[in-house]
Amino acid sequence: MRRNVLQFHYEEIVFILMILATTDLKDYHEGDLMNFAEAILRLDSLADKDFLKQLKPINNKINNYVINRLIELQRELSSLYDSKLHKALSKESSTMSKCLIISRQLLMRLNEEYTEPTKYAEKHMHWR
Image (cartoon, rainbow, N blue to C red; front, top):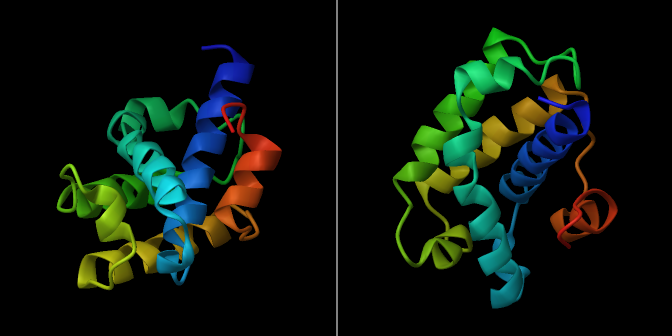
């Protein structure tokens, strides 16, 4: 896979981590929450062990621990999947709390400084 495509997918993952590492998502507008939910659903296809190994040239901090935690994060999030995922993001739950912790740990492991998700998207995501 071409480096620029891998870079884009890496940034998608970091964007998802930024969203989930946000302490209080209820302060966001419903449109933002819907965009966040759409991004999070992408984790279903991104959290594949073989695919994640291909991202190592983008960030050499990606190792088996990071890969396994991303897969665990995706599994945790799957319990929230329904047509109203965007609403679940703004409610306190044990699943969201666990996802917040995992996301913050992964951002630290990847050497990515937390940035407010919409600001990260404006700077890094082509679709925003």
